[in-house]
Length: 493
Ligand SMILES: *[C@@H]1O[C@H](CO)[C@@H](O)[C@H](O)[C@H]1NC(C)=O
Ligand SMILES: *[C@@H]1O[C@H](CO)[C@@H](O)[C@H](O)[C@H]1NC(C)=O
Ligand SMILES: *[C@@H]1O[C@H](CO)[C@@H](O)[C@H](O)[C@H]1NC(C)=O
Ligand SMILES: *[C@@H]1O[C@H](CO)[C@@H](O)[C@H](O)[C@H]1NC(C)=O
Ligand SMILES: *[C@@H]1O[C@H](CO)[C@@H](O)[C@H](O)[C@H]1NC(C)=O
Ligand SMILES: *[C@@H]1O[C@H](CO)[C@@H](O)[C@H](O)[C@H]1NC(C)=O
Ligand SMILES: *[C@@H]1O[C@H](CO)[C@@H](O)[C@H](O)[C@H]1NC(C)=O
Ligand SMILES: *[C@@H]1O[C@H](CO)[C@@H](O)[C@H](O)[C@H]1NC(C)=O
Ligand SMILES: *[C@@H]1O[C@H](CO)[C@@H](O)[C@H](O)[C@H]1NC(C)=O
Picture (cartoon, protein in one colour):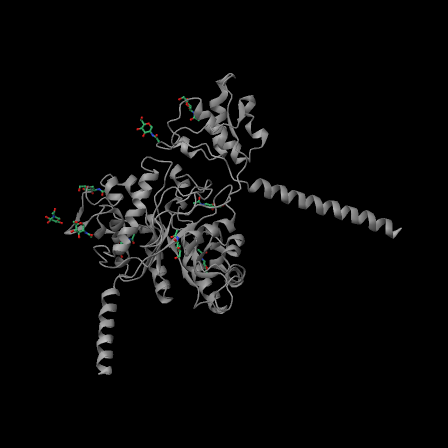
């Protein structure tokens, strides 16, 4: 009798697991990049991750402050190797060994618990077309050396080596996913890379960028990109129907993987997001629709036409915070991928961590801002030179909301647009009085000059105070050393 019940229970469990096995839940992490002039302090960023129950983070490097702050946090970490190190890591096993020692081994305790480094990302999208192929020859060799160094350090069962591929590493000229392939200059490298990661049971890391695709492909509409199924026109790829740009990009990648002989490899989306400024269609409301559509789609577990009922293992949202020093080679929007502004304030709400989680994101707390002061143009002066001054200011400060067509400040009329440029420079220089000079045209004000969507920001207190501390420490050392030597020389006499 009891045996019978057990049997029934067991078969019920088996059926249940059969029903649920093909549709695993996608875990959601975020990219935490380092290209900011005034980075939010690492401990605050980790508080922000914890407050929002974000349990996975991808770093673009191995910033010791970030890793120390993540220590003991239960957050899974991807440590990044900068592209600039790939050449030496390819040619020297010794270099790989010391990289693993300095950046991984010292943070991972013997039970793997201190900093939970789950992956090492070899390169920061080293195949991006804008790099002109300079890193391609070193990537797989560097990955192999890092892998061997991990084995030697007894870490290979805890830490996996992955290689993040940019969205432009694969393509389809006709726009049809069934015609997807890797970029021809990557053919050989991809075959080696996939052989390598398959051998070590690592997943394939790729970025998808429906935002770039929208701008590059005239056949793709905004509704199709934002998961608006009711109004988007489906794409017919020989009887396979695509309802959104995510599925289309994902299956383009799956076809590319199949074409080089790896049709069933696990895929992780290393970067995916929607910017909120710096381009037409880069708005907060579009970003909110995209993220909500993406997360709903993944949670519906419907999969894509080529991988039905199957979702990527993990996705990492681009990005946690805005970064004002990212390259704007492809557009001002590159500085506005954040779910949060540079100072850790949520731009919109989205249920990040699954059904039942709060829909609203929590902001960073107790952020240390500079004073509520702005630099504007002094209207009472002769403004003949002001446009030149503004452009100079923008050559070093981040003026992307002003200078990018469609940017949140691109509609500012003259001379408010000059004021915006002056303020960017003033804030970037930590509100130092001489950074609001502009040949006598600048004026410091305590009245917020923001208009409508265009926010005149106040910077957070970081680099200036760090710099001051650095100076005073040096000063103190010099002073005490000279006092000591005076004392010692007296003593000697
Ligand atoms: C995070 O998880 C805790 C406990 O499960 C929950 O109370 C809280 O609402 C969650 N916060 C968010 C932002 O989802
Ligand atoms: C990568 O390293 C290997 C082994 O040291 C070396 O033979 C090869 O030439 C290197 N590749 C390049 C492109 O330098
Ligand atoms: C756009 O659609 C047309 C007509 O269906 C097709 O011929 C063309 O290849 C498509 N272009 C792209 C870039 O997808
Ligand atoms: C790349 O690989 C694909 C599939 O193996 C092949 O069709 C294509 O011709 C290759 N391209 C180059 C440039 O080698
Ligand atoms: C989809 O495309 C195929 C050819 O690839 C065509 O035979 C079919 O009629 C199309 N279906 C629709 C609904 O347009
Ligand atoms: C696209 O939408 C149609 C209509 O709602 C649906 O029948 C089809 O299954 C969807 N395709 C995918 C791949 O989700
Ligand atoms: C970030 O900065 C580093 C150097 O500081 C640079 O190599 C890298 O390309 C930058 N990344 C982006 C996305 O701008
Ligand atoms: C700028 O003005 C144009 C024309 O009035 C309008 O279509 C656009 O939405 C405005 N952009 C912003 C960011 O306010
Ligand atoms: C500000 O607006 C004026 C007048 O439209 C224009 O000539 C000038 O180039 C703009 N300057 C900046 C920095 O946007």
